Image (cartoon, rainbow, N blue to C red):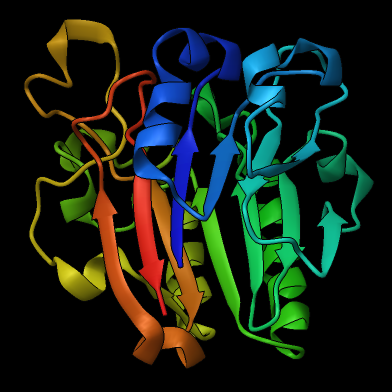
Length: 252
């Protein structure tokens, strides 16, 4: 099973930069998109008519903000919208597809923002998200496709020392990610590659992407029970269309 996750930073913008061609070329079984910034009536018609895929969406109440979408060739048994907490679900941050052997969670974590204005909000979301995933895990293993909006360790961003008190690299966010993995989950990319210099997000400023001055904030995380089924986890850094790169997971 081939799954691709991508923070598209605005689905309509990404569509104008070749999203549909990318999807047709990759022929993934499932696409998980974050930060779609769309309402139901704003999706490009050609995406609505994409043959062979069924689409599911969780929208933010605020227009032009957040939102997640899933396009799947494999019909889900069930679909869950949100984690059951209105303060987060109103921002369209989580959608879950239940398949025969696992749950697929597509999530877009809050950004802590400048001056860490939303740090408490994010840490609260993090706690509730972990509780939600552990409840799912009691039924079957979990695959999480997400922009976690955190660089976990110093090798996950280019300039760690300069960012220690900045959004996405605070001690609190990183400690939570530590505890999240220790609770029974695997950062799949690090199963294959433990080297620095691999990122999924680059600012548009100062040719950061060309110079590879970036952060790894997008992850496929899976339940430990699925480790033996893990075949591939990659960053598709050559694919443009967003300030994030898509990531790919292959699981048996």
